Length: 345
Ligand SMILES: [Zn+2]
Image 1 (cartoon, rainbow, N blue to C red):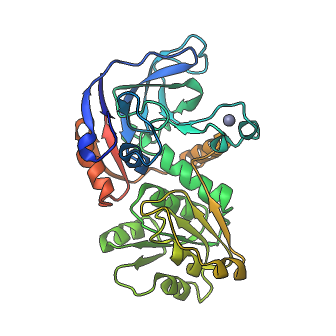
Image 2 (tube, rainbow, N blue to C red):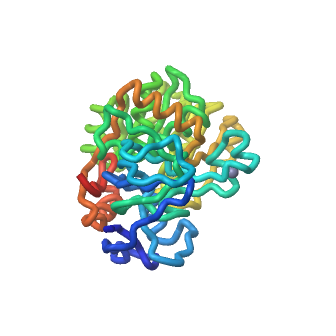
Image 3 (cartoon, rainbow, N blue to C red):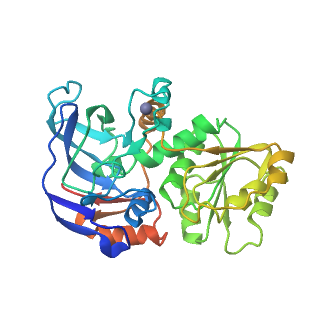
């Protein structure tokens, strides 16, 4: 089968698209015929080696996927060959104290398809049967293959960690990124007032059409936090959603209101940042980290997305062979929304 993989960590030139052996399902796994697989920033970290992954063999990238069940292991009963499915890429042990508590993304051996196992940028992938779920019928395969990781991450950040309530104000940095856009859609669905930032007026215009209430071009203003204060009558926002890291972290502590929350799920800039501790204690702020989501987060997110018929914003659809260009576009932050790799039709 055709697959996009790396043999060693490094730049875009390390990506190969070649034929590799097809996977066999173990007794509790299914093999998917991948129709479409969405890119995530995680794929860049895995390729570069910053994820901590040690390579022992050619490693297929990719965490998101939608496809059709092609084969099922002997112990699989809940999924049938021919089912149209999406993948929850979170891998948990099911036995540790965190899993027993229902917090699978806090599992002591938590992993992600494409990070800790062979990924989805391939014509086939073997995954645990308990990780596949029916494809939402209102989505195309390219939409369904690009929505789980970003929506699940945004859902847990906003709904479970920051406990967003209707009428609250939310600041989202770097609108255009997958998680940032999902956070915008979900925050609007929840009845929040949303401020977004970008360096691109074009991206801000597109965010406006998706429902962003206020737009800040951080390249053309002196002080993003002051703009946020001005928009919120001097108070600041209830929640800052950070997917950027070092570049935006200092802004968060000036832009959230007293008693506000800063929630971060990843970094597209540096991971080491300066924290204004005086603002943290004096304004009684709460900092929260968030990774992926639990099985219950996933269930609630899929239900909410399906009921509201939300669709991921697709930047583009590329054939698997063009994975290098697609990943280069994401690395340069030129995308607006998810980039889907169409693996088969
Ligand atoms: Zn566990």
